[in-house]
Image: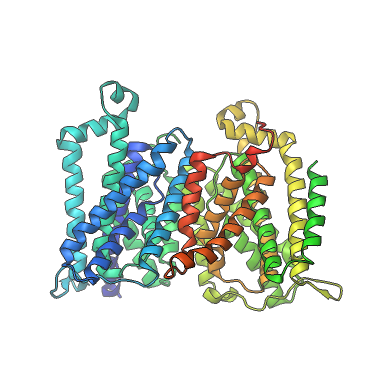
Amino acid sequence: MIAQLWQYVLAGVAAGAIYALIAAGFVLIYQVTGLINFAQGEFAMIGAMTASALATGGMPVLEAAGIAVLAAAVTGALCYVLAIRPARASTGVTLIFITLGLDVALRGLGLLVWGTNPLSLPAFSGGASVNIFGGVLSPQSIWVLVTDLLVFAALYVFFRHTHAGTAVRAAVANPPIASTFGIPLRTFAFWSFVAAAAIGGLGGVVVAPITSATYDMGLTLGLAGFVAAVLGGLDSLPGALVGGFVLGIVEKLAGGLISTGWEQGVGFLILVLVLVLRPQGLLGRAVRRA
Amino acid sequence: MYGRFGLVLLALVAMLVWFLPSYYTGLLTQIGLYALVTIGLNLFMGYAGQVSLGQAAFVGIGAYTSAALAVKGHVTPWLGLIAGALVAALVAYVLSFIALRLRENLLALATLALGIVINVVFNEWEYIGGSSGFKDIPGFTLGAFAFDQRAYAILAWALVVLGIWFAGNIVRSSFGRALVAISAGELGAQTLGVDSERLKRQTFVLSAVYAGVAGAVYASSFSYIDPSSFSFLLSVQFVLMSVIGGIRSLWGAVIGAGVVVALGQVLQNVVPLVLPSARGDFQQFFLGVILIAMLILLPRGIASRFSEART
């Protein structure tokens, strides 16, 4: 029984690592623009589908992965330029609907481009599964965890130790004053979309060998990413990491102990509980603009 | 004004169904039912200024309640319709204590999540058919007359007219003005003595009643439901109908429902000619693009173009 539970936890860690990447994208965009981007999961879909399609066509996996992340980043840039910036004068609800429209449009685009059949992507490396205290973690799951580590380390270095990162933090802390000091808020909004899309795309690429890639994977991933982001605190990048792992573990435990159909349901029950009991999340500060 | 125009429209539908092929009569029913949901949604989103991305769940609750009563308990769909509305209202009432504490972004997220949780319940609850849903749901009858496609179209549009009449009265009452005050600024409305929490709750419950009634009629008229009939994509379509017609408008809901259903038909027939490989729910690409384009170009909807721009 204990061994079984431990295995669920490990599976949850592997799933949670992906959620954390998607959640990081939400947090980036929310911090810089105050917007919840409902299309975040679709960036992962674009990444996963592009990489799988290219690899199926014979391209080496890592090369395909690189192009896929680029494709996701370009998609993010286009989303901002074509849909978000023209509506920047709109109120909150309109912008929510616009990102919702982006989500639906991108999913439909994936369907039109790649069809309904799942595509598969070979694992990044061969090798035996890793045994951790009696539980098993596949080599690809290790890749996912390493990706997490690298992405969050890079974000940490960017925000804490670079000039541009400090400027972004200033812009988040107080937009009008940051603006008077010459910090280009609108440029930051653009780059937050690009970065969030690239990170989401990377998440899709690393998860594709585990789950295979389908045009509609973005909704599930995106929603899990939301839950992770809200759970950790929408304005906290470390929160995204913690929220992702907590959600992954709880989902897999629920899936193993109740029924796999409840995996997603439990995630949302957590979301609802967090929204009611602690809307700022585990690691977040009080919610801005309540 | 609402009443007379509505009766003319109803008479028109009642005449039209005798000439239309039954396929189009079915579409007419669908437009009517979608319009009904969107009228309720517009009260909640347009007038009260809130967001719901989970409205399809309430349609599902109405449909499942009526279908379960009819299939398992042999209860007439007329009672099923009332029961469906009541259960949807009850669920909305309970959920309102969670959801309506939130605003904008987080309210959108919460309603989306609740909608999906309700869909998971449809999928996992074996008593109501699990993932295969209900087949052969009994239809409405009136004495010895069993409803056909025409009768359903007339029923649906009679409900639309009734729904608009009722919503119109609400909008023009002090209740409606208080809702608009909430959407303009909740704190301001509260200082003017508006019990915003109660009003939002009542409007949310009312929108669920509209959805539940539509769901109950849907279940009987299509005689088949499963969880995928009430997915997130349907909730998005309701938002699109609302936005296209004009979010703060009642007749706009009818326009929006008509445009979205017609658009779905056109896309289904035209796109495969251009892109032979297209199958599945590819329409969502166009729905999404249109939603974005509408919000950027005509954020107040089509109806705003030819109705007096009040409030």
